[in-house]
Image (cartoon, rainbow, N blue to C red; front, side):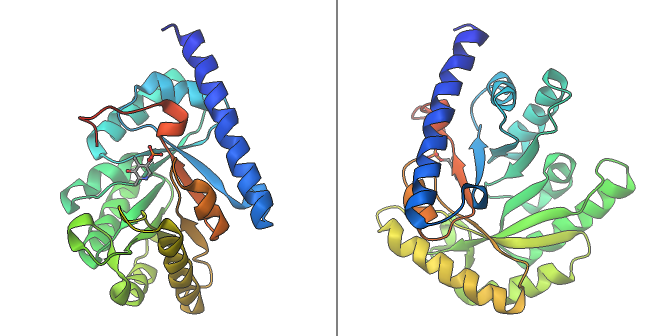
Length: 244
Ligand SMILES: *Cc1c(COP(=O)(O)O)cnc(C)c1O
């Protein structure tokens, strides 16, 4: 496929996703600008991400440090004017903190105090080395089914982790992120997340973000107050069986 054909394909799917978001906002009585769209470009080439930036998409998301770091560099050289913001939405090992601090504007998958500490140190080191300017925006990934194997902070530990993040000088807590657990009712999951957000804002009034909703359930997430939908498949197409 030529880049031109791919651009038209992406333009069409972006228009469709934008239509779904707008309709969901209207249905929920919310303004369209209350919801950010993150294009999840994992497994897709840097050129796709560059074409999305041509179409006005600013926020790009990835779930693996190595792939993301390489892609961010490539997109910056393909589109030096674009000023994309890269988001990490996948589980993260502490030994990758120094690397993500180079490319990520925001990490949505912070789920432990040890990871938070490693990220804070890594951001400070990256700023000292002139590799980044700003503090790192973070969301706490919440585990809605309490299954530690799937990542995410258990609801019971949320207040403590939020407190740690506020003390970290180079991290800025923006809110919460969750993935609706497989095989459960997404409405229940998103409602639980919204309630956790309300509780969090009693002590952290600026932590207003709720990142919830993907290709299959973005309308329901917006109905429950999502401020950020993370969309891969509906924008870029299927990732195939071998992909995460
Ligand atoms: C891949 C991924 C998405 C996008 O999922 P789609 O169903 O392809 O839209 C969203 N959030 C996270 C954390 C992901 O890993």
